[in-house]
Image (tube, rainbow, N blue to C red; front, side, top):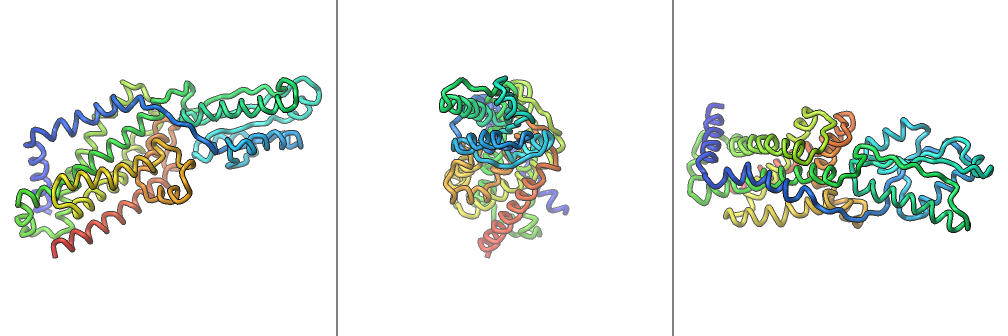
Length: 364
């Protein structure tokens, strides 16, 4: 353990003595947040719909069928009351919830007009905005096909992000990608740099076994990642005014398994590259860009071909984007986010095992 402590001190001192790395570590994340925090959104389809039909009539079922048959919505769940609808939205099972009150069909037959309610998940402002527009379009189409003005009075209500501000949805995702980029790049070049400057042989003759050598190389970068998050959080909270409705403890606890994945990927890259330039290219084009494209951060996963939807289950960023947006906008905790945490722990351990095997093979 004393040798491991000396290894950690050596890595931290090496980082401090590099005048070029410090601005990259602590200034670049803030600049990326400021530049990328106002990113645009894209269209979606197959919005997950939760339905609470309290009328349970033929008319109400036909009304629900209008939504499902529009191809803009896919029925995700059925609720018996408003509490179950709120749980479906909070757990991410649905993006929009439709409530049909009791007496819906009777009000229509009487000519008084009927009311219904749409609840939209505003933590995803892109889906929330479009889903409300889609719902309005369905009702207007139903009215046009019947040759009269709609008798249904739609009262949409957006949860989690009532003003549908896109930066509230995008900035937490940008923060997740910055954590991934910085920790993966640093760890991917860690061992490669030792090889380039000729100090790898000196490390190998130390009493540290390969496993502790890996720990000594990765833990300092995990600490750097924690410092980066602490630096970027004030920008997210006070510059962009993104609400933090959940617990910082939950966010911190679920960030650790994500960094386990990114640091493990960086170590794996370092076993595939011979120079720092190669490490940067492999990390960027083989691991980072696919994660950004397939994580659901930019493009909705449900819009992807089926084969790519299956691939996304092996993407750590997919799970962390759900975590960070859930904590910031929905205020959910471990009781909802534990599947994402468990998935990241499993992926992280598998990645580290693979990287450890390749590292051992290189030593042999």
